[in-house]
Every structure is written in C-alpha cells, then in structure tokens.
Length: 297
Ligand code: 856
Image (cartoon, rainbow, N blue to C red; front, top):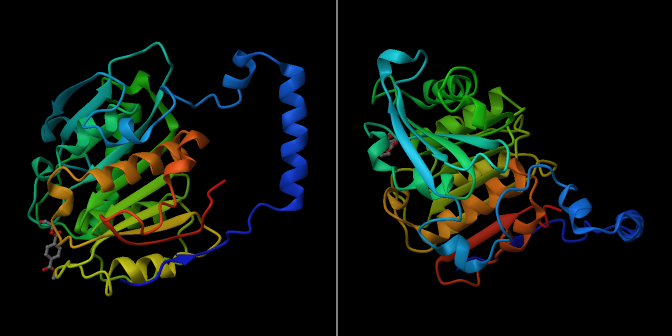
C-alpha cells in the first residue's frame, strides 16, 4: 500500500480563527436555530451520518422518467431522476455519462442513489456509443442546459448549482466539461479515461475515483496524472479503491457512492456538514489510497 499524501493540513490560519470567533459571536447575537439554518440557503435534507451515506437510498423519495433522443439536441436523451419534494426549494443538478460502447443502463444504480440525497440527476445516452471524451464532455453540458432550460423538472433546479460525472470515457468527458465550463460546482470522474493528461486549467472542485487494478484506464496513466495536473489551489481529491478494476462504477459501490455524494453535497450545496466524510484517509479496507487538498473548509 502506498502512503497517503496529505496536503494543506495547516489551512486553519490565525485569520480563520479570528473570523470563526467573529462568526460565533454573530451566531450568539442572531440566536435562533432558524437564523443558523439560513446561513446556508442551499442546505437540503437532514444532518448526514455514516449510515445515511452508506445506505442504498438517501433521505429524499425520488421519481424518474426517460427522455427521448428525438426530443433533445446535443446529446442522446437519457433518464431523469428527481426528488419529489418541492417543500425545500430547488436542488442542484448532476449530468452523468456512461463509457465507451456503454449505455446509461450500465450506471443506472447511481441515478436514484444520488437523487435521493437531494439532486436532480440526468443519466445521459450519448449520440453514438463510440463518442470520445471531448464529445462526451460537450454532451454532458448540453444535457445540463436541457435540464435547466427545457426539461419538465426545470422549475425544481437551481441552474447555478450544476455538476458532472461519468465513467471511463464519460469520466474523461466530465474533465472536459469542467475544463470548458468553470462555473460548474463539482466534477466526479469515475475510472476516467482520456488521452489528454494535463488539466492545469481546471478550477472546478473535482473528485477523481480510480480502481487499483484497472487495466483499461490504469490509475498510473489516467487518474493519477489527471489528479496531479490539477492545480493545488483547486479543490481536488483522489480516491483509489482497493482491488477494484475498470468496472467498479457499474455495480453498487458503497465507498464510491459515499465519497461522491459527500463531494457533491459539499461543493454543489456548499454543505459543510459533509466535510466530516471527506478526507477519509486509507484507513477503510476499501480505500487503497486517498490524496487531496484537505480540509475543504
Ligand atoms: C465501459 C475506454 C484504448 O481505450 C480503450 O480500450 C477503452 C476501453 C473502454 C473504455 C470505456 O469507456 O469503458 C467503459 O464501456 C477506453
């Protein structure tokens, strides 16, 4: 097992402590729990626990429907999953691409899993199953535009809080999308594959998940160089799953889902309640290695 690489563990500065003191004093003056809840207008759902993140569903009931390729442009249609609740306001949204020759059905467990934590999710079909990562990146952005501007769930979405994810060439596509649209709030490439190894322009908070024994998108040629090329000033993390091959995103994977949801909640919802789940270190048996710019606070 390689040793972890903790970075920026000294991020809590004197200025930060002083600021924390001022904010704490303000909270005393403001007083009520309601005033504290209003501190983050994007917080959705109850306080998370290990159990809630490891369960097969989060706290929100969801519905889904399919979108025909004939009704959209720029991508191949897909399936939309959304929380049925309208009592907590709008939700952030996530577009997810499958990999080379694969359909959304290869990843579809992720749709209700992520939506049930309070996100609108579109799992896309690509125009062609042979599309390359740059094309998949454009299709992810077209799907987000469709979701926000034209879909039947558009009124449920906060169009300023969007994210991308994908598997393999779809994960490579999520890097392309994040590079092309810095206003995205998060990216989660899963076993990403891309011939482009340099992502120094990337500014979107990005969690890369790799499999230790992946021989299609080996972490040494894909996830690790991608992670290393993202500047340290960007929020980034690299999770390497112990003993996994290229196909770990295609069946229910609890460590992956837990980290992905925590990352999305932290950066799409600005929800600092999830910081306790980031930076897990290699302690869990499932985690081969974890590198990041902790503490994400
Ligand atoms: C599931 C990406 C040379 O590249 C490859 O052989 C290759 C194979 C598969 C994938 C991929 O996206 O797999 C996801 O279909 C690259």
